[in-house]
Length: 76
Image 1 (cartoon, rainbow, N blue to C red):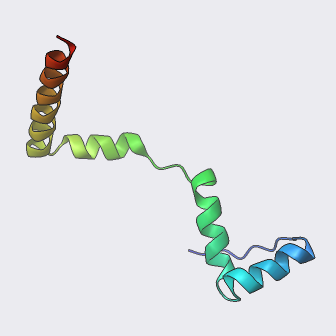
Image 2: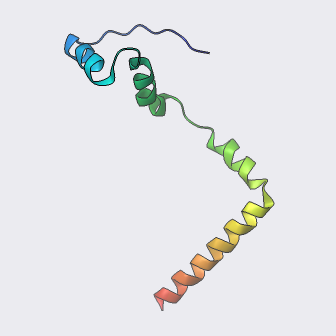
Image 3: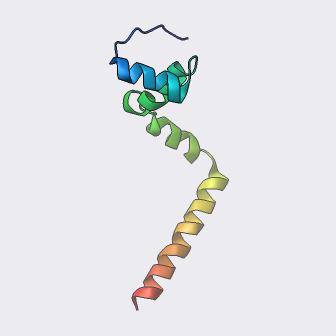
């Protein structure tokens, strides 16, 4: 669901937004810039969901073990 938000910006910023971003595109631009600062992904749930995939987990474990062996070999 979308919500309407009224913000106040300097006239120079307003003019720049219209020139550079274009009218009717400003809301999307602001949302894309702001989203990473205010919407935090739920990594814990995402990782738990990925861990349920046994095939993927086995492949990841094999990859990790190969890389650890490579690192041990380089250290010698």
